[in-house]
Length: 172
Image (cartoon, rainbow, N blue to C red; front, side, top):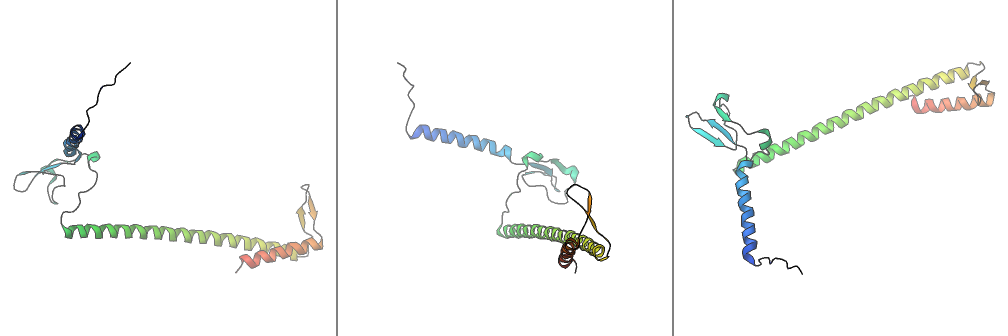
């Protein structure tokens, strides 16, 4: 018979494991943030998770975060800058929607041009077919065996009706 080891129970072991987990997360948190290091205009070395102010010469930037450590920009600190960030986000979303709308409109215009070209081709073919049928000459068409057979007057009249219908739907 095998006896399982006794596990401690109660609030203390659970609190201890939670505390150890939180401590591990806190130790890893500083390493996860991007760090900038630069020399300010007054000659003091600055450390921050934000890039140096505009106008700082590149020679004064001592360290930049690696691309994998830069995740998201930090949220704005004040209410006014938060509102500006929200407005900028809304403006960006509107710009993206406008780009999508323009792309869809261009696609619709291209599709309309293709359809117009196809209608023009069908119209021209129907006109040529009607002209050939009305010429009074004998008309031949491939038969079931592949040989050319002459059309009788009923077949010519049916072909003529089809050509007229195609012209009505395609020519305008």
